Structure formats: C-alpha cells, structure tokens
Amino acid sequence: MNRDMIADLTKRTLLPRRRILSAGAGLALLPLLSALGAGAARAELTDQDRADVKRVEAYINNIGTLQASFQQQDPNNAISTGRIYLRRPGRMRVEYDPPNPILIIADGTLISQVDRKLGELSQMPLKQSTAWFLLRDPIEIGDNITVTKVDRRPGLLSVTMFENDEPDNGTVELIFLDDPIQLTQWIVTDGDANQVRVGLINVEVGLQLPASLFATPRVFTNEGEK
Image (cartoon, rainbow, N blue to C red; front, side):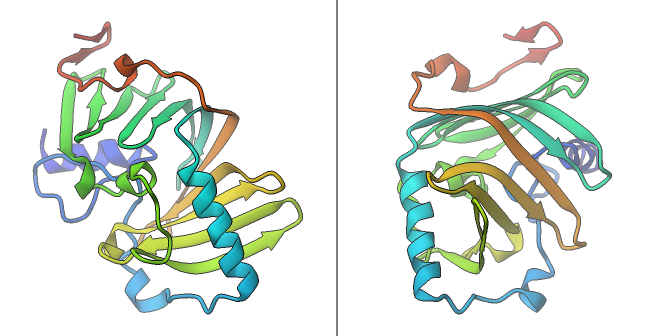
C-alpha cells in the first residue's frame, strides 16, 4: 500500500493517521493539528473546571468495557455509521457499516486498519498511536495531557485537550452528557480546521466482550477475517 492510498483510506475513518508516518501504514485516534502550536494554549482552569476534569478522568478510568453504535460526519459532511467496542486497557474494535470497508482493531500491542474490499492491512505499535489516549489505563489528565477548554452547557460538559508529548497528533473535544456523566460525542480537528464528528448511540458499559473481537488481524476479504 503506498502513501497516497493510506492517506485516502484514513481520511475516511474516525482514526486518521499521524503525519510522522512514512510509507509504512499507521493509525491514530486523533487527527493532526499543526495549527495547534500557533493558536491553542493551556487553559487557565477555574476550581470548577479542575473539578469537572477530575470527573471526566474518573469516568473514563472506570470504563472497563464499552460498546456503542456511532455516526460519523466527515469534513465533507459525508455520514458513516458503525459499531465501536472498547476493552481497556489496550483493546478496541471499530466496524464501519457497508459500503465503507474499513475495520480497525487494537489488540493490546498493535493497532491495525484494514480495507476489507481491497484486502489491505496497515499496522503500527499501539503506544505510538493516539488511540492510546483512550485505551491507556489509567488516564491522567493534566500530567501528559493539556486541557485547552472546559465548557458547560445545560445537560452537557465538554473538555478539549491534546497530548503534551505529541502535540502535532491533534486535539480532541470530548462531549459528555452530565448528571450522570456519559461520553456521547467527540470532535477532532486537523491543521486546516477540518473536523470529524463522532456521535455515540446506545452506549453500554461493563459488558463481557469476547477476546475474539480484538484478535490481531491477518488476512481480510469481503468474506471476513481469516
């Protein structure tokens, strides 16, 4: 798979690639935000902001497993749907509904993106991808992650942040229903101000998810995994 093919493939998913990847394929949970260094800055947090960030941190750290349907809107306003499964730490599966052929799997060591139509596989170490942001355990917001904004609206709480060690990986705005807190949406933005919005539907946590969901992929075809 050449670099142009990888770029086209990843632009169509909620897990765009990192800029630093060479012709070897790779994934990241967050898109690039090259404009971040010029425009974004650490927020001056109030006591209420810090308390809400701690609530977000505690909520994510209490998630062992999660499954949900999702709806994704890309920068061209195209809509994709699918299912997402998390088993922290380190495991994730993202299945897009047809006609999108993309499947993404984090197996605890590698994160893999496959095109089931073309039978092509791209991989990188999980800890070198920003998918690790949500899959690490524990998440400690503030030590390795910079908060740029905390916003409260009726029934909603949002926190915008980026990783200190990899600021060019991008930023993410996590949006939660409040009281009780529940992740419902995230928005990622690249250096050209393009946004991908992902809304979660029918979120379920604490379920038993089989290990087979997160098995390292080998060969993919339209008929499935082999």
